[in-house]
Length: 385
Picture (spheres, rainbow, N blue to C red):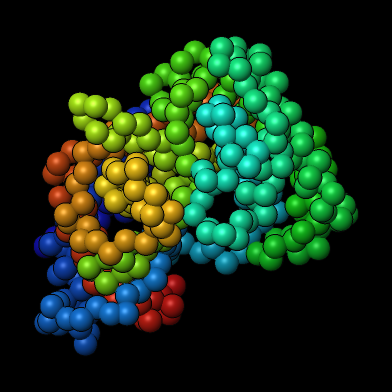
C-alpha cells in the first residue's frame, strides 16, 4: 500500500482547541505490510505463544513507535531523549510537585484529609510512597465545611501546599549550584533550588485558586471538582494483553459515581502542567494513540474495579488485569482526557477525549500490530537511530 509520506510526515501540523486529532492515520494494512517486508520476518506465523509478554508503558510509545516505523522503512526522524537540559529537568520537577498539590486539593475537596486520604492514593499496598506520606501529613486536620465557598476552599488548599513545601524543605540540602545540568543526570541540587525558590510556591497558589473557583461553581460537570465526589489518585494499572504486551498505565485520577439507572460512571483526566503542540502528523498520532491507551486502562478499571463498589477484595487489588483489548468497550466511562494548567496565568482548561466507533476499531487493529511488532523486533530497535 502506498503511504502519502508528505501528508503524514511533513511539518506544520496545527493544534486545535479540541483534542488534537491527526489528519491522517497510517493504515494498519500498510503497517502489517511493512512488518512482512522486514528481512527475516516475512511470512511469520502470527498465531504464536506470546509469553513472556514484553513490558512497556504509555510514554514509550513516543520513542518505540517511530523506531518501528523507521525500521520498516518509513521516513521517520527518531526522537532522541538521552540529553536533558536544565530547563527540561526543572519543568519535570515542577510538574511533579504540582501533581502532588493537585492531589491534595482533590483529597480536601472530597473530605479525605490526613489518614482518610490513604485509600485514595494509588495502589502501592501496605508500603506507602513518600509522596503519599507528604499528602497525608500536609492535609491532616484540614476539614472543609459542607457549604465551603471559594475563599474557604482556597485557604485550605494553600495551607496544605505551604505545609507540603515545608516538609520538602526539611529534607533537602540547599545548594544553588547545579552539578550535572545538561547531561541528562538527575541533580538533587536543582530540586533544592526549585523548592527553595518562590516560583514553585506561586504556581501552587495559582493552582489552588483555579481549583477553588471551579469547585465553588459546581465543578462544570467534572466529578473530581464536586464536593460529593469519590476520586482515586495516581493509579497504576498493569494490563497483560493478548497481543504480547504488558503495558503500565499511570492515571492521575479516576472519579467514580453510582447512578441507579446507568450503574457506575467514571471520569479520568490527566493533569498537564506543560504542553507542546504536535508539529507533525506523526506527533499528533502518537498523542492520539496514548490517549486511546489511557481510555482502555480507564475502561478496564471501571469494569473490573469500580463496577462492584461493595467488593472490598476487588477494590484492594493491585490493578493487574489480563485482558483482550478488543473486548473492553465499557460505556460506563463517561469521559477521559487532559486537564491543562497554565502555570503563568493560573488558567485551567479541560480537553475531553472521545472516540468514534471506527476510531476505536482502528485502535484495536493498531494495538494488535504494535504488540506484534514489538514482540518480534524489540531487541533490534536499540540500533535504530
